[in-house]
Amino acid sequence: LLAEEELRDAAILIFANKQDLPKAMSVDEMSEKLELKTLRNRKWHIIGSSAVTGQGLQEGLQWLQSAVPK
Image (tube, rainbow, N blue to C red; front, side):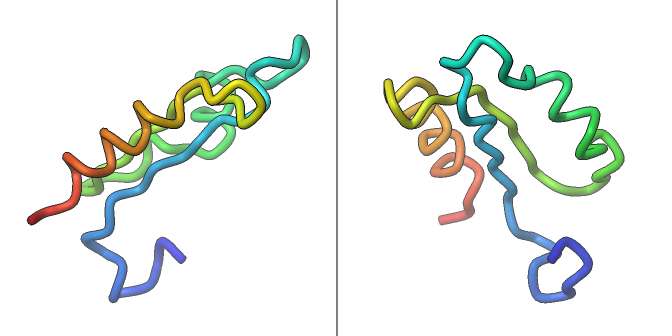
C-alpha cells in the first residue's frame, strides 16, 4: 500500500495494540520491525494501545485529525 502513488501523501497511524498484555511487542520494537524510520517524506505515528481498555485510541485519533490537511 505504501508504494501506491495515490497514497503518497496519506498520513499513517499505527496502533500497537495488545499493550495490556505482558508479552506484547513494545512500540519501539514494532517500529523497528516495520522499519518505520525508513519512511521518508511521510507523516506517520505509532501509538501503544489496548482495545480492551481504550488506552491510546483517543490520542491516536487526535494525532490523525491533526495530520490530515483540512
